[in-house]
Image 1 (cartoon, rainbow, N blue to C red):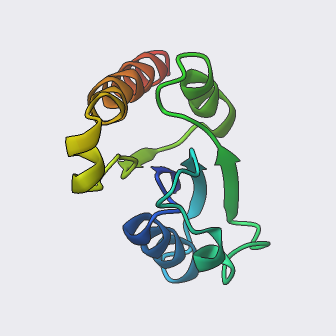
Image 2 (cartoon, rainbow, N blue to C red):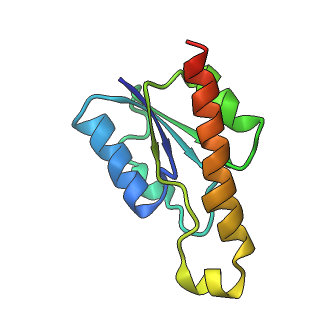
Length: 118
């Protein structure tokens, strides 16, 4: 199975990537924007594993997201990319709206277009 994981460098996402690659023997493409919450060192144990790939990508990018589907051809998507720091959302909600709503919509559009075309 081939799984596209968004937000795979975050706390939960990195645990999911490690589990999928290390225990479920699943091919994973980790697409992460690498914002303040990202931690690539948490993925060291699977870095270099032929089942694991990383792509720095923003789910709000309407050119990049469809390309991820075309190039990787996933069987499933685990969407974990999000802005999640509550204090930051109070100070400036625009980034949260863009990523959590618009980014999710862009990802859904790309998934629908990709899987309709199969």
